[in-house]
Length: 246
Image (cartoon, rainbow, N blue to C red; front, side, top):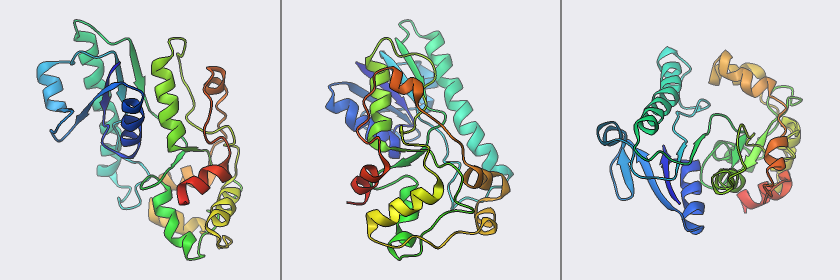
């Protein structure tokens, strides 16, 4: 199939593109910068939707980027980066002479585990130094997913006609607590992981609103994802972490 991916140059988009191409699909990215196999958002507005079978939107500023202060400007950037790109693609689909067969939005997933990017890249150094540990109380749920499975779920959704509606992008074992995650990551690295990160430190780094996401967590189960017939490559945390830190 011909797949158009909005915001496909990042960590998730790169993994998804590799998988789609490996499965014989043709991929075009929509990004801010022109290049081979890409169109820009400006070109999309000017020329309309290129001929494609599926549109996927991954665009959006990382809300938990620890290098960005949680101020009004960044909050606006997080919001508009998702809304504006979705609006542009939706308009292009509406006005297309030959609209795509499928339209996939990625709006919220678990903590994505993978090599060379994602949340794990910020965790590895302190854990390798034996300074890792739970965040806050550690009792909060910590939904996660391996990057290979997130790309796999998206590919499954576009290849299988019966897949519709909202699918949770988390692993089946996502009822893991933050403390259990920290222990498993420490074990994968052969390091202790008992030094907690106090809530006050998390709030100081991320701001009170963002810190809530890390300190309170959420219990998410991929019931509908499993019901579609998707087979996880990394359903268990230990195997996922071993693959990431290998």
